[in-house]
Image 1 (cartoon, rainbow, N blue to C red):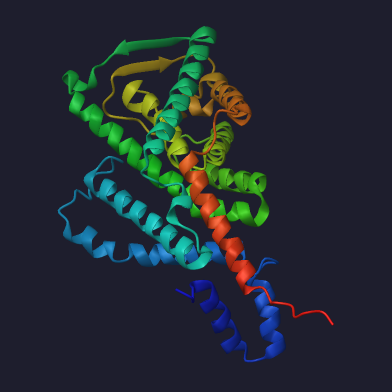
Image 2 (image 1 turned 135 degrees about the vertical axis):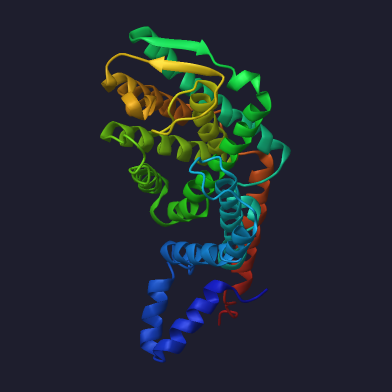
Length: 341
């Protein structure tokens, strides 16, 4: 379709101003040097669209027989809410890509390709290694006791349920924090600045978690950077989703430890970490200690140096097709110069 949301914004701004000179100035504010709608406006439109897409789900939430009284994060009300929220952000991302950026949904990084499984597994592997290194280090320098708990009479279906729940929650956090908003911000101010800003926000939103501390904030900031780098390396949201899910899942349902200050009701093991709270994190969990901060920073540096982490060929091909199409469109729209006299 010839017209788009960005062109509609231009038309509306000029109609409101009804002045040629003012309209030209407004277009400079709205568009960058490449004549694209600036990142800040695209991000704002995306957020508005996300809310509009989510609104129809609200009556459904009220109709469904959900347990809204439960405060557990795995309650039915919470799960359905997160599922609808996830769908809203993905649909809003498709609308923004299609009608503002004129890009295919594949470039969002939320694809269901065979390579997506590999990217998810890589993320899970990094998350498990990260947690394993932190726990091993704490065992070497402090007092760690691990005993079998067995998920309340070896109820392993619950374990599978927890895996799906943690995956769902990791998906929504990564779609929000490393999805369209982050990707658009990267275009506007650069990857490094965007990663720092989004990671800072990611850390701050956890400030109301039980027993939050400055060290916990530093850890969450570093992990925000880790998730951002995992995405930028692979250009797939599945890598940070796997990493994020594995870190939380191994702490909670596997090891039976607090996850960002929140306890879990069932786990395979019960793990108690002693020693100085400065190193172990205290009641917030290992995320609030220097040990997790240092190990995670080392993992972050290792991921930055990992040349084997790269986008899939299918993603690169989708990107090439889009870039070639964009260049062709620019050539066709360029003014044709007449013959020189």
